[in-house]
Length: 265
Image (cartoon, rainbow, N blue to C red):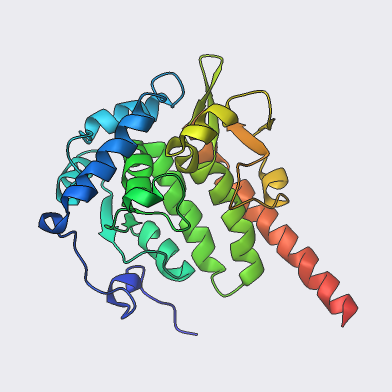
């Protein structure tokens, strides 16, 4: 098989050229953004990681203005070199990881309706922007995200491998906790955009484990309710430094699964 160039994703016909049409946002859109922003931002000064709090100041988000991706891209260009890639919504795994391997974070531009304030099946741009984009200003975090995506692309045709890598993504990028100055803080976007899970994740109710690559790879996650366990890193450097272990343990687990299948057959 001929190897694809690293930037193949940008010429893939599934990735249609899209942009944020800022002038198309309605009065309701601005109200939804304002309500969601103001409702959650008050929970974060004592709960969120320093990287997030510094990041949201760096990219200058506020309750009065829906995030403008052109402005975000200018800020990111001057910090980590990443950018936002507009997508219609959920995209195929190869496009998802292919974009992030090329330092492009995929984001939709549509906002939930007023009647969807408290529950949404598919992430909207409030989640993508408010929760994810401030963290893209942290260099070790985005380096981890890029290289994890590279590992995923090596195994993109193996559904089990992608499922296992998704567990790493889920328990770090979406639902990760970090210990800062002896206290648990949130860096996972799935928590940062949820008032309920912000409080729950830091409480004594769920289990808290130290970051453990092998344990995470062996732990299925929940999509439609609060997690019952969270993994704690000590720094974003630790996250980046774990990449070789992620790759080696993944290979080991895939080999074990292959051997089991061969014995059965």
